Length: 171
Image (cartoon, rainbow, N blue to C red; front, side):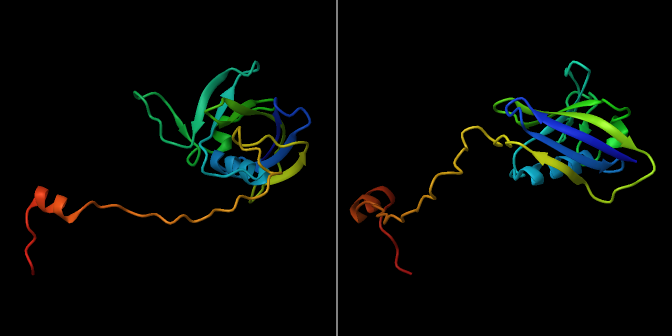
């Protein structure tokens, strides 16, 4: 079974990404195709949230094991899409920048029952992609050249050392 998702952003009204994944694939694979197709760096923390029709967060699917106080939780690498996504128009929130509370809004727009996919597939990418982390809009700047500085280390006088630690023995 193939899930067809549409991904939008409030920051960039013309941005739209459409992705197809098999129901047997994990939320981590969904995360990876989003990161890869947008040119984002994968070291940033992210989470999916199953939401209701009004985009209120219901369940979190996290990259990390957050098993707090015995409450039920889901980990991206262990949770298959088919485990939590059941019907067309299901809404998800993908938070990709926790520090600035920035997210994509994802909606399941179709399910194809008679086919399977081996790998996630980007079917549409259009518009201006939001930057991954605010403050990193440096695409038009010239690369900075690092200049190596000569560093002189001052370890003090030998007299100070012998005063504190005593005379050194010759070996």
